[in-house]
Image 1 (cartoon, rainbow, N blue to C red):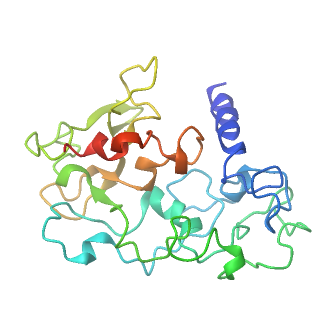
Image 2: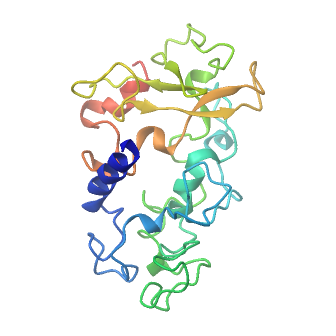
Length: 262
């Protein structure tokens, strides 16, 4: 029942946003709207990518060729940055500008070629300009140079949080502390929102800043699961209550100030 409720809630949130790429959405006049389905552009119940951290992901992933923030050479960066991966790689399979929006593993319905879906424009290879979500160098088409974007795959608060040290370092006053708890068999981390969801439970809410667990390859806790900032830390692709799918209302820099203590 809870899974069905989540699915219905997600679909309702996506329906009136730019993430509805089907013929019922805001993009209905575009050439990739040959279906009334909504979820198929990202998810498939069968034959999904086995490499994606996102569930039942329906798109090809390409982890190569990214330039990340640590390559800027800034001297103030005190956290380890991992190669682009985790849930961010799934986001970038649409937003790196290299694939068309209908370049999915399984097309709607039969999973085979569906007349009107591709419209003859895109074959799953590198997309022409018309196939991308916006022109190059805009937020919807980030490209593979991420050096001018907020770091992703970066340890939260400079590192120090880990499975053996879940409460974190306790001394980096530039960041608000991350909270954590065991959910199922794994420990998860998040940062409480400045403006919590009404009726919140005190545990993780969708309006909190979500952190994603990855195994660190550097630092004092290398080899241990640690919390990282990823694309979906700030953005929830299934909601429509804030601009650009932000988890938190950006008024007054609330998104930034949820993590950064300034």
